[in-house]
Length: 139
Image 1 (cartoon, rainbow, N blue to C red):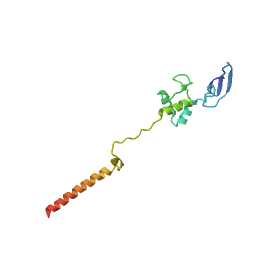
Image 2: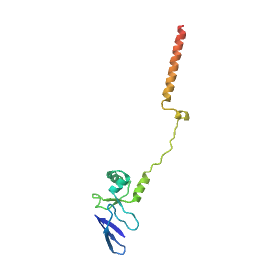
Image 3: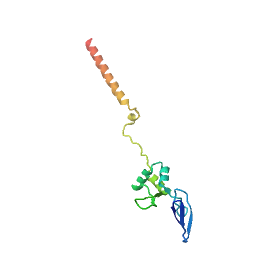
Image 4: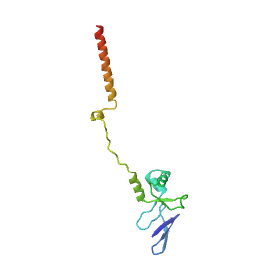
């Protein structure tokens, strides 16, 4: 059976050549067999928690598949399957890369301020040695 929706009326063509009329759930186009209804642009944007503009951009760039049930390129009426949305999510999945450090483990465990503190301690020790040397000369 092939289905389409015109406003709130659903027209289904049976494989034997007959026609069935009926109401349809708002926002979806009925497809043949056990396939779930297609989602419209607004429903997809709500499901993905992004704007409709961004959904259109993903379609335009070829990252998200859609069915154009409207009047061509100018008057598009996009519909989406759950499988296409799932494929989009899978293609956008980020696999975390293991963090590699080239620093010795002794430096890695130190705080970010430890090198500053080490330099400060060395400078203070050098100043103390100079003062001590001056005192010894003056005696």
